[in-house]
View 1 (cartoon, rainbow, N blue to C red):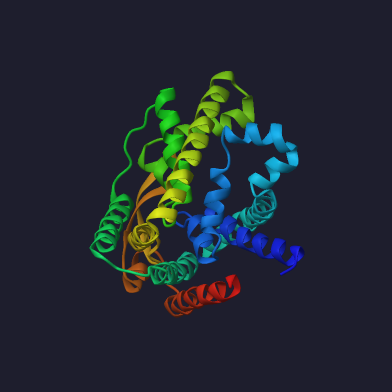
View 2 (cartoon, rainbow, N blue to C red):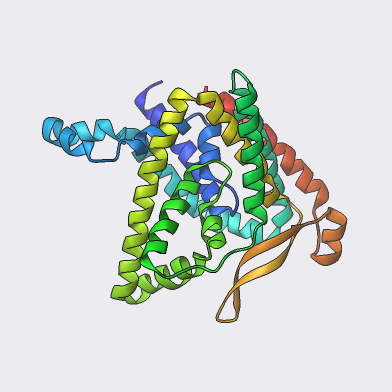
Length: 313
């Protein structure tokens, strides 16, 4: 494969990750795993650290670029940027007007993703089975618990950044959803981030700086843990990730009704709790369930993963 094709292939994977990150409850890490770049991504992130200083002194910028797998990251980030734009306009429109259809598509995609990852496990011992069960239970529990009351202390902001970015890397877990569960979504996104963009207030800039440090710390930590796990306990790691994905399916069931909203100044900004229902009940309480079209899209999402798997090879 020549360099241009390699760049295009990686960019397309990034496109899928970018679109996935816009969808609440869908992780870009899942797309990375489906398209066979997950370990490479983790290793590229792991390269960020103090060791780069020595590489810079010895081999210069070119050496740092090589150590970071710069071509890979550049192509991936470029694709993700485009994917986020497409997701914000295209997927957001579909979520607003045809929610069961788009959720069914991702439901099928995630089911196939779990099957794909599970098939990579060469041996199912008692350790893999236990890890799978625990991960499934933890992920399911996360999707059902109610948000807590957050704290505005800088220490809590740092911890929130570290945990949220770690969740972003793990397949099946959404970083924004973790912020909601910690009670930090309003403070970080609605208050602080928007405040920085509008007023450049020093206190809000400091908060975002601390949050960014937390994200950087979490990113470097979880990437090293996952890299070590893939190297020394690959089957166990794959079983855990498969469980996380299976458990997260509860969050993306196509037919759901909101039961609790995040309100800011009396305006409903984000759904934070939902109840899963059947299409018939959805039609009564919400509106058109698009049952047939949703089932078609569910199958389409499932089949698409097979195409991604073939493409990645």
